[in-house]
Length: 122
Length: 113
Image (spheres, each protein chain N blue to C red):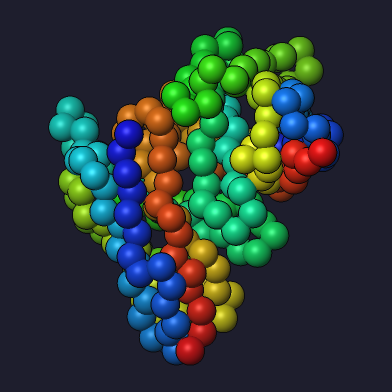
């Protein structure tokens, strides 16, 4: 059974950088051609797609965040990562990592991590 | 961006009754080359990640009870719960994966009347 687990700091200062890692177990990122993505959800609000990455590092980003976001993949560790720079309180959210159920980002997400709350506050 | 507009924002349904959630996309999400609608439906319970129920507008994911069904094409889509069970209390989201940025609807909260 595929499992995804987010990890990273839960509290950040404004203007700092957010770095999260998603560890994939029960299956290797490099063994298949799936795409992997990040989605966030501010408290009590709707879901927002941040971006997605292939196992060879091809990326797609939400234009609303693209200038501050980078997603990378480390197949040797079966992990992919998210970095968001210049954070503000608007970046406070639960951050989920997830897998697209196909070989492009034009597929829905079928496996999700449990999510990690990131709070931006001074 | 394709805007996904869900209605209603919330609804209360008696146990065993039908629940219907609508989702309208600001442009068509039907890909003509494969005749597929690039829409999915998710269920999210408190403190949990979303769970995919339906993809390609009407294909039920493995293990999803058959009381959940999806329909629609082009710009108008519906998720129906034919006989509401207590465990179906959740927020439901539609999502389009037709074009970037991928976008979700605002969610519909389903409760027991």
